[in-house]
Each structure stands twice: as C-alpha cells, then as structure tokens.
Image (tube, rainbow, N blue to C red):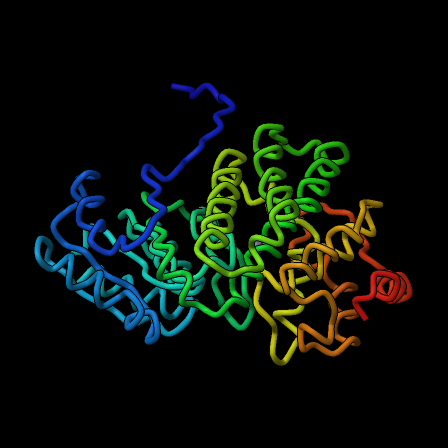
Length: 353
Ligand SMILES: [Zn+2]
C-alpha cells in the first residue's frame, strides 16, 4: 500500500510552565499532575546540586524512587553516561536542575531514551531552558541537536536570582538576537523558499522588543528583572516550537557565536557572544544596530571584543568563517560569507573592535 505524502507540521510544547518563588516543593505536584512514572532521575552540576539540586532530590524522594547524577559538561560522553544510568535505574523521567549544560544533557538523553524531562533552570542566560534544541559538544566542536522540549518548566525566581547578574544580561543578548534571526529567516524564506511562520516570528520579535523596552528594569537585577527575562526566554522557546526549528531565535549572530566557541581560547557566555554578533548582523541587515548596542549597554552586557575578553583578530576570523558552520542555514552572510575586509569594516563601524 502506498502512503500518501502529506505536509505535517508538528508543534511540541511544554505542558506546564511555573514561574514564581520557592518552587522546589512544587516539583512533586507537577510530576503527579503529569502522571510521570515512579522512577525519577535528577541531573545537576556540582554547584547547582548545592543551589537547588539536592533539595529537589530530597523532596522527590518522599514520593518517588530517585537517583541523582552529577553532570560534568555538555558532551556526548556525558549524554551516553546518563543514558546508561537511565537504563540501569529504569528511569521513567528526568529533571534537570542547572544552567545550560545540565539542561542540554537532560534534553538529549531524554530524547534518546524516549522519556520526558522537566527543566528546572538555575540561570536565565539563554533560551534553551524551554526549547527543543540541545547544544552538545561532540568530537571537539559544539553542535545544536534537535531533541524535544521539556514537558514542564519550573522557574524559581529566587533560585535564578542567586546566579551572578552576568547570566541575566546574557539572557538579554540571546533575546535581542531574535531581531536579526527573524530577518535571516525572512531572507531564507524569500531566497530559498524555506518554511516561514509569521506567528512564530512575531512571538520571537516580541521578546526582543520587550528587552529593549525594559532594559532599565532588567538592569536592577531584582526579582522583577528575573521574571521579565525568564518569561521572554520561555516565549523564545515556544516560538521555536511553533516554527519546528530554531529559526526564529538563531541566525547569523548565532553562527558567529558558534565560530567563536570553536576558535577562541576562552569563549564568553553564549548570550554575550550572540549579543555582540547581533550588533554586527543588524548593521549588515541595515537595521538600527545602535539600538541593539544601546540596549546591551543599558543592561550591562558586553558590546565589544574587549568586554567579551576575546582578541579582535579572532572576532574578524569568526565573522569570515561563520557561514561555514551550518551551510544549510541561509543568512545575511550568504553562501560565500564575509571577506576579511568586509568583516573588519563591519566590526569597526559598530565599535565591536
Ligand atoms: Zn541562543
């Protein structure tokens, strides 16, 4: 029998999003409501174990069979290790208590094992806290792997506020990048006929506009600031889920950041690099790049190579190789990328170098 080929657009979204204070105790209620199985695996890092991981583990133990695992980094090796623990323990679901790496490992491991995971972020530094994409290091380089979004997001404002302010500012960088990411997406839609969702694009742009408008509130670094950033980052995740790809929140500025991750001896935070990349890509797109820089300045995020702690020469190199990172992702950099002269000029005009 021949199968009829139909265009199906799949949107997977978290079922519950909790944003508030003192939410460790809520973990059990969320798991009960979602009808998750008896065996839970809690993932944390050495630091996030102390911040909230251990507490989550203890609370869950009252009703569930719990195993805890300390994750060392977002590598394929760690994903494999977690997978074998899931196998041995027979885990029905996972909960990731941590920043980027821990959530990324849980995301990919849960996808591969076919079990759900809950995201319990301890920082608000990137939009991966609610998205389906995991950034994992494999064979030396970092790649973005499509997995599944968390079944629930539990964002405890008090926990996130204990992280250094720098992380919150990085979250702003990851959101403002939607301005250029959406432009790149529109370009790919027009030039390559790529699928485009106006709804996902609008939702993504809303987060970027929100941080521009609320930069001064975010700069205060208080609980209201955390709420604003977390809500925006979750919306980015939802926008990506609606689009079915990271397109609404990842364009050339992300390729630039991935290039820096590859060549810089000590890369800065993802959101910090992406923010600086957005200044340059906004310039290339003919957008108001000064507004991007101004917003990043107002929230205290880096706006140049010096503040990123990266050599200007490496910024130029990253700009010239960015288009090679994901050749299938068409952006303002085109198929051939920037020439060295163009890269240097764009970085100089925008004050990045
Ligand atoms: Zn990002």
